[in-house]
Image (cartoon, rainbow, N blue to C red):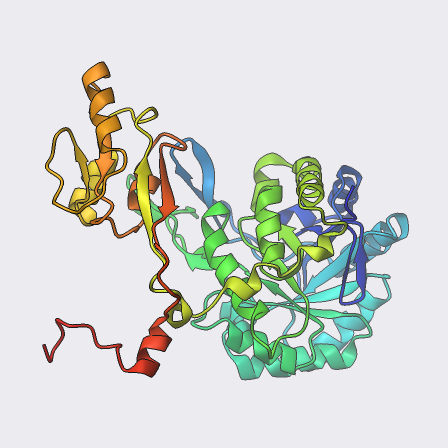
Length: 444
């Protein structure tokens, strides 16, 4: 069985699965119960001056049968007294010394940062996470994403924390910015020992059309919230990968954003993360999901012949490049399995209306010299069953993938290599050779 233990900037944990700073890490009782279920670490819900929350404070989007595909909240930081939190952190660390306990912090002034850091250090916590990402409520008070969106301010405040702290300092970044490498590099230059991302995305998840108030409804009003859940995973993966491949960022990364399964976690780790943080999935299904995550990741590592999760870290980063470095001669073509096609026509309609109209049914003529490997088999099955089985003209197919995405039958449409020996050539190669201007432009 592969070793799942990690060391994140000096913070040890039995596995990479941490709870993100959020409602599931609001109390010591919750975190200790999570550790009993198998979570390797937890980031305590953000401490600062206690706040007053609204009711309601959560909104969600469901897609098909999937509930909470996207989730939004307008909840703020802790609403409990600082001394209560500190006492519970101390007790949690005393009872679970091998688990990682990181404390999220958000205060205003330099003196406030100094005081709260020193008080947290006395609890025995393993590290600090600076909340520079909260996109609602706290940013209007000059904290949260208000700091994360201003790299120079971020650098100053993170520098204070590094100066005052004897513990590793993680900076949690906001995705509400154009280029994530800007605040990421600023945090690294400030001396931060690690990065965590993404925090939630500023959003409105819907409108109550009876009351004409956006969700979540607070009396007769609402406000923008922070969006998370499975829907944000692609955004989080992109931002994590951008930082992981940036040579100016050499500190470890804790990935956050839509992680609900071991596969999600493996993808974040393959793109450079040392640990992963989970919130929405726990709010949906409870702490118990970590059991499947541990088993799944462990089995995957065993199947790949890896003895440690650390061997997986960053393996996919070298394959992430700028568009200009992609191989323009690489070509795939859609292959429809006539035996699996149910004749729904979704691929045909999608290709005809949104792509190049290379998918056909029946005896549609094939231009001279063109290839359609499944044409005869498709027509034969159509005659046999009456099902309108589709086939693809490979010389018209651009390999865009759209048909494989709309097909409702798993494995019916696959994309196969049709490069046919053409050498690698990128757009940057074409620029270097002076062949970057394609006929049909402004000058002929």
